[in-house]
Length: 140
Image (cartoon, rainbow, N blue to C red):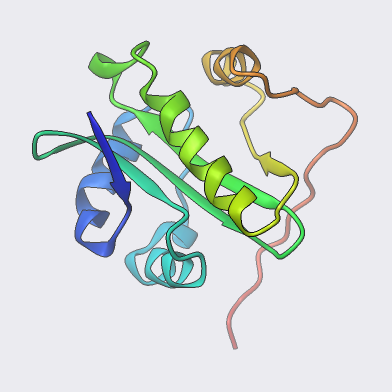
């Protein structure tokens, strides 16, 4: 397994991976143009895991200058429980740490019990003291 920077050459395969994995919520923010902008803004922070020419894992990582954020961590079902997800997360944390980001958040569906167990297993805290409040914003 090799993990490398997520580039736009990977987009179609990564979208297919995300669509195949339970617990990943995709939206218009995951369009090709929006992901391209995200990767440009957060250069060298998002990664894919490869087995030969196949993408078997992917994660988006970025920051707002204060906090890091992980999105859409996914590992293909037949490659799970081999440390691939953990390795992708560690690459993201290392990238954030290298620019001085000291805390990282992620969003997870409350119904994603497998995902919650994964994150807790690798040392993340499932906070229950905050909720997310969202609003759709239309581009002018």
